Image (cartoon, rainbow, N blue to C red; front, side, top):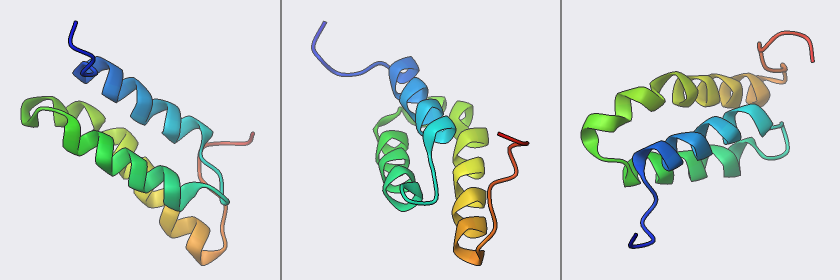
Length: 73
């Protein structure tokens, strides 16, 4: 193994960011997720779409002063 994360590892990291992000960390988490997405091969990126769209929506809602719509937590 050459130390380069696999597409599955990158997707897992994006997914983890989606589930752990908060109002305080959304900007940093979104930027990190974009960097991870860019590191994925083009043909693997669609697998991350739902998480990226979710992070983008949370970022918009947090900036408007609302909480995320992930259900009651």
